Length: 262
Ligand SMILES: Nc1ncnc2c1ncn2[C@@H]1O[C@H](COP(=O)(O)OP(=O)(O)OP(=O)(O)O)[C@@H](O)[C@H]1O
Image (cartoon, rainbow, N blue to C red; front, side, top):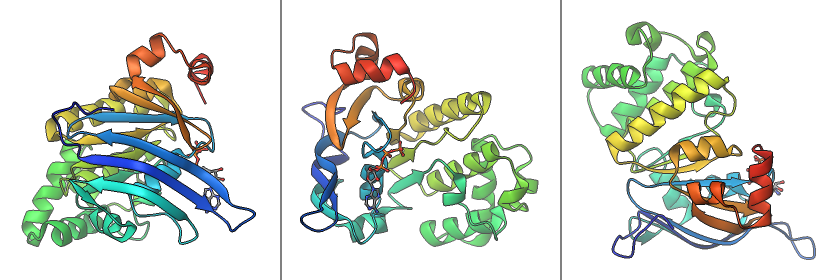
């Protein structure tokens, strides 16, 4: 899956299982899924509501709640990672963008303060260099008038601008993997198209591995060569995104594509 026989995957997931509750009321929300992702590759995860997409993303980010019972192995860069280790990799080696940029931005701090903090803490650079880097990243995500934007609070910016900044914050520390969970779902169609272009460009430029979660086949088709289809926590179909869309053989995949919105 997204990895040729000669490549060592950047991310390798084996038998990931997530359960909640105690016997006899155990609920399995992700049921033994396997996939791998190479450096620079993009993998989409699609599935209906409640199929386990976000739970998978949260597991990879070390963000599941304490009540989650997790089994399986998550190997990143050749090492099996505990949830604590994954939490430490988040914000450095693994970046995340969520549906609502509020999840990444603090409402009470100016954009500049937030970006400077990320850059000085994670890259260990001085304030002047961090400021220059923050401006460079705002230019990279095509925020007009970066200097003015750095003085703004999140509520003074549009949803699309906040999501661009969330992408800049996730990428400015040069992660090797970006996990994007419905990154454009809350945006209008034009802004969504612009952000998908931007993500595609940045991914190629930075040789970033991308795990993209979306209910929208159009979004996945735009960015991901390979796609997994999740249903009730299980992978029911997988393969090249183009082939799945052009000739879906699994009835569930066919139904999702026919609906085009799951
Ligand atoms: N803390 C929790 N305790 C128990 N069950 C949970 C918990 N968090 C999530 N779930 C369940 O896990 C299942 C998978 O949820 P998940 O958020 O991964 O779905 P999803 O595929 O991302 O759906 P959507 O597209 O609607 O966001 C759901 O049935 C959800 O109710």
